[in-house]
Image (cartoon, rainbow, N blue to C red; front, side, top):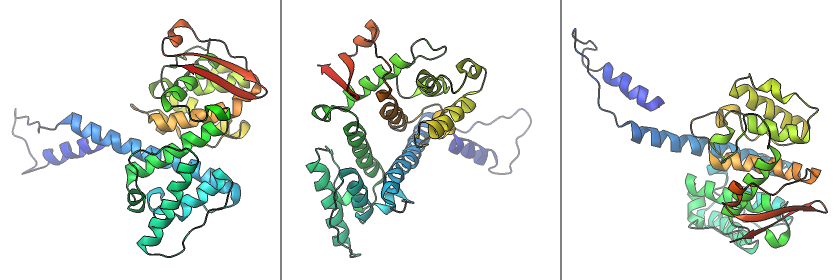
Length: 303
C-alpha cells in the first residue's frame, strides 16, 4: 500500500500539479498487483528477521557471532556449517578459501549433512545458496527449523512427520490449552493470532498467577502482543522472535507465527497440562490422539 500511495501522489503532482475546477482525475492503478507484491515483500522481510533471530539464538549457545545479513552471510557456507554443528552436535569440516569453488564445496557439505539427518529439501541447490537467492535461502532455513524444532520434542520415530500433520497437531494443542478463554478461537497460524489474545491465553493456562487474563480484553492488539512476548521472554525463556507489528497486520506470515508457537509448545508441553481429545470439528481435519508419557509428547496420525 505504501508504494500505491507513492504512485498516486506522483500521478497527482504530474504536469502543472493543478486541477481545473470540477475536474477530478484518478490515475489507473492495479491495486491487486501492488498489494500482492508488497504483501510478498513484507512476508519475506518478516521471515528474514524471524529466522535470523532463531539462527542467532542457536549460534549463541556456542558463543558464535550472530549473523547480520541472512542471505549474504550464508553464501560461503561457513556460517551454515556453524549452525549445523550446533544442531547436529558434531564438527563439520569446511574450506577457508574465498573463491566460489570453496563456497560451493562448503554449502554442498552442509546440504549433504542435512540429507544425512533426513531433512528433505525440494528444489534447493548449492548454487541457490551461494548466489544468495532470498526465497530459496528462506526455504532452506525453514526446512532446518521444522526438522530440529520437531526433533527436539517429538518421539524419534515421529521425527519425519509431514508438515501438514505437524501443523494440525500444533493447532490441536493450541485449541486445547486455550479452550474456554474469552475471545480466543484458533483456526490457523495467521489471522487467529492478530489480536494477541491467543498468545496470552497459552501463557495464562500454564502460568495463571502471572497476570489477570480478563484485564487484557480492553487493551489494543499491540499492547496484548507486547505483553505476551515480554512475559514469554522473561518467564518462559522463549526468544523474542516476533514483534507486535509482525503479527498485528492484515496478513501475518504463517511460517513465522508457526515457528514462534512451536517454541511455546517446546517449553510448555512438558508441564503436564492435561490434553483432551479435540472436538468433532477438530477431528474432521484428522484423527489423532495426544498423550503425555514420561515428559514426551506422543501422537499418532491416521491418514
